[in-house]
Length: 338
Image 1: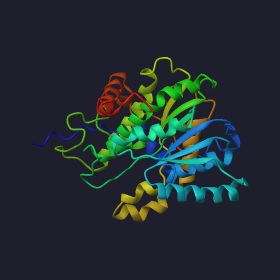
Image 2: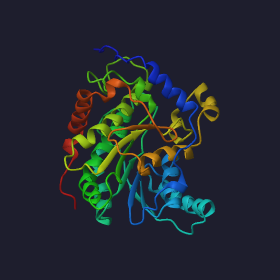
Image 3: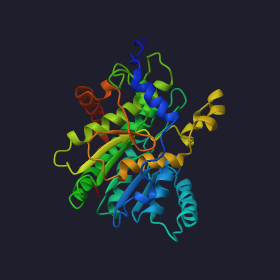
Image 4: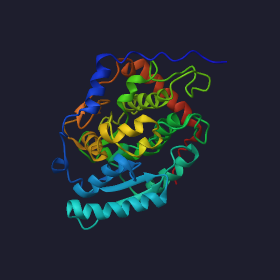
């Protein structure tokens, strides 16, 4: 039996403003020459083998002295990306070597997340910055995670949520050795959240099994959740006040995430979307800019404060979304890390 279609609030002035910024963004406001050196720091970029994640990891490898971990699903593709990155860093940054490493991660299968976290935690005794960049968009109708969750909701929200739970103790402990807000958790969201269901999640049928909908709503819902995760994380981690948790829309970018695009949109992509390197400026603005000090803020391309749809940042909706994510991952969270 079908449920009623979700109520999607009219985007209003803020939504139109976000769309205009996406297609006609300002120039990057925070770039390589301003990045801190990050000596001795450890940074994770999920999905760092392709698209904006690749550009973010490459910029870190070329512009800073951080130790960078790329978490990705395909070992073959990730190792090839690191080899390519080494060549490009040598050419673009005149740097003879890079400190970039791979760990396998499948955000679409919650049973595998602990193994990925364990591998990292067995190698490192600090973690300064986590950039939750990996995600999927526009997947085929009916696509699901291994756990049977709608693929975009599961991969973009529940996988990162569980992964972060395993990293929380080390991130918090590391933050005690850093200046306030040098330690960061960056949740890559999107201006698509303006087209998400009211309150961000269609709680009557989050997987949209029995609900009439436009396919894009599924992605928009997942990006609204990412924003709420960024707002909720500090509230749910007492004593972690030295860690800054923020979200962002990297920009309207021509990346591999567009691979499911079809029809006339595929023709328009090269003309209206920006090079993924610019998206890295947005991600690293959020991850590195020392002027950022407000929890839960949301940034837009290519390094500007953005707007969140008002109902998405309401405390009651943020709290409900966080509790919902916690409920979805609790059966897969094992507190003992070996």
